[in-house]
Length: 249
Ligand code: ATP
Image (cartoon, rainbow, N blue to C red; front, side, top):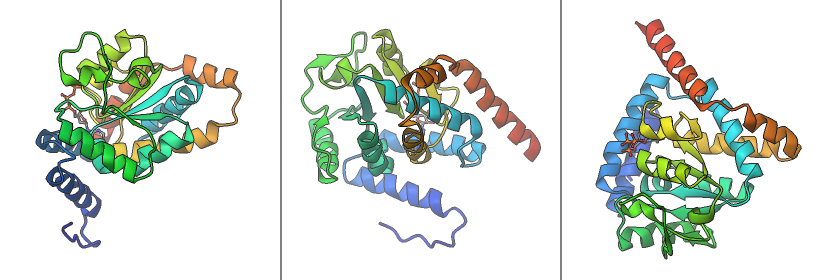
């Protein structure tokens, strides 16, 4: 990996770019993943590259939902594995939840590479490689899934999702938690809970809340979840963004 001086004012951003670029060279990230990353970066810049208060509230409610879930699954793609594989593995252990690989630009080679990487990092069962079900109403390969994984999941965490699959999962009656830096994306608008934050920060934040809420009574977790209003939270994100931009203008 290219050496980036720690003194560089954009150090973290450049290291992250390097990670994505390396992962593309290794066949983990699809080339269009670089474009998706760029869009995310732009929104992160506008948000101040930090976890903003409404995002942390969303992460807390997401943790409550995951703790109450019967069969929670974390769906990962190339970008997520490139940037947050360790965080996702640790989060999955803490809940506990299953990990399933799901790709828009699906090739057997990329599926195998991502699965092997997760296995090398200690995940015993990685779902996705041998699909035996389809998400109804989706024409793309993102419909392919495993019965024991996403197909029967009641809660699916989808970092960096596309709007179509988010809506299709919702139509199946699932609770969808999205992590997306763009509060205006179809995914952000369609999810049950949207965390507008970078996947690199949001995943550890959800895990923080998992540990914090682990001993909370189920009825109290339910109360927390019932009060959730995604549209209101997204409005708070937009309000934060416009106030921040106003203060800079
Ligand atoms: P939609 O179908 O929901 O409108 P899209 O087509 O705009 O999505 P995609 O290309 O499918 O977007 O996915 C990229 C999304 O992921 C973008 O909304 C982008 O902001 C977001 N994103 C990219 N990198 C990150 C990251 N590191 N953390 C969180 N979100 C990210």
